[in-house]
Image (cartoon, rainbow, N blue to C red; front, side):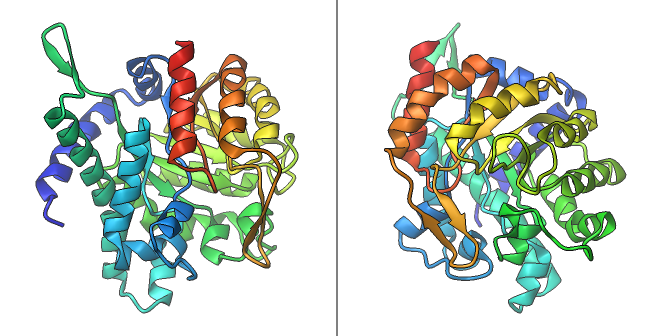
Length: 350
């Protein structure tokens, strides 16, 4: 990709730091960001806005193959909007999924690494732009840059199935704890050693998958930090019907997990979920809801909701922070405009 040195440098620095201070990794980062962290927003819809055709089982991961420049562009759009954490385009990138499309195992593994390389490149490009445009400021005689982390995205097993089951958590009786661990093992190994700052396990729809991730992190001796993010459709349970408290308890007991929260969930449920999460864990709470629309797994369409997405997000942010969340972003159907609104709302209240 022509940026191997950039990625290698980032890897060396970050891995050492996270290995020795994983227990305080996220709280330290939150402090560096002034007490509030901005996560990026929806990825696939932004890729489509830039011209990508995602009508494919690989979904956004398809762009790692044919449109890496668009992936980089979306990362930069979110960095320009004020994001402190950008997530890689690997949500639906699995070795099994790539192999089903005719790629070899080696090619599939290279594409997983590429997702992280592109995000790291975007961060370096952004920093270079800031320096050249004098956006940085001096503090105690030293140049200060906005803290930015690259999170390697791991979508749920349902995302690989591409049948909408990450929104139901119903994988069937044939899918066991061992099935899920074996499915994710190599993907997690690769992403953990790719140069990312942390792994983001996203849209976890049931307790079984959370347990699989926790055991996998322990079994493989994964040293970089991780976050667990669940989704809910009623504000009480995860989408499978498992109590949110039981799912969060699994994350709380996993030493590699440095933050826990909710993504791809309607904004109206977030406040109550933050309260429920904080009853179970003292780890930092992250929230990055969807736009409030509902995904239909059969038609693969989002059903519109009323209200303005960006205004809704801005009006909720302060309440979510008061409820105890520390990391804020957007998921499906949110945009750089949404993230800019979040960043502005948080900076105005500092």
